[in-house]
Image 1 (cartoon, rainbow, N blue to C red):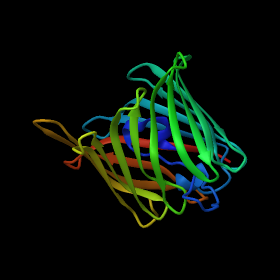
Image 2: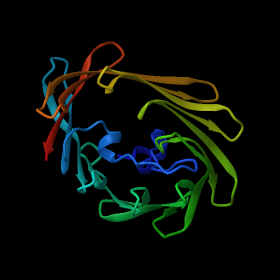
Image 3: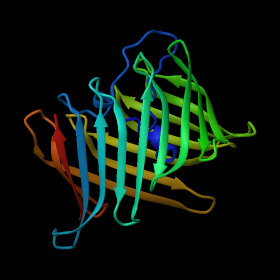
Amino acid sequence: MKLVLKCFCTLYLFVSCSGGKKIKYLTDLEQANLKGHLTKLITKTYKIDSTGEIIKLELETIEIFNKLGYTITDTAKNFIEKNEVVNFLKYNTNGSLASLSTFENGKKQSQMLLKYDDDKCTDIQIYNANNKLENYYKNISQTKYGLLSSLNSYDANGKFTMSFVNEYDSIYQIAATAKDSLGELTSEVRMHLTDKKYQENILEVSYFKDSTTQKFLSYKYEIWDEKGNWVKKNVFDNKGNLIQIVKRVFIY
């Protein structure tokens, strides 16, 4: 799935466009390292107590894929905050993303529109619930696979606000950084991948004027299905404590 097209603050932005060359656009199944002809993926995240027992269901996401392997709806139910966010995605005939509309608890929150010049993504515009431009992204560059490698963010008045850079191991993201309008680092994410190209650990660092915060998580995959997709993973904090269990249900 195109993660930052759903939430730019996470820094994981995948755009199916290239720098002037025709490309075979990556599907969401390819980008997410999912095998088989999936039509639906249900992911459930559970909170764990100190004994390793499941306390409660925290989050459930449901992705629906079209026959080509692109996400057409993505629903996230947060049982802690008691809200539901649904993304609706539309694509151009060549497989590039055309738009993404976000609804929270049934109310429209935003819409993202992407513009292209041939295969090159040239402009990404974000509108609020009242269809008013909030911000936009330009100076976009991509990898040979069409994945976003950098872009700049501007507010509705054209003021430069942020810059973003992503790094990849082939088609799998391993790093992301964000800087403010003065070029000061505001956040960075570093990911280490397993041999199967799944995340083994992730370090998120946020930089403030007088302080820095870090969050480190590591993952252990335990169960796999017949297609080769992981079914269960354990999530550990920086002290090695088990804090979450994630389970997935695949519908082919």
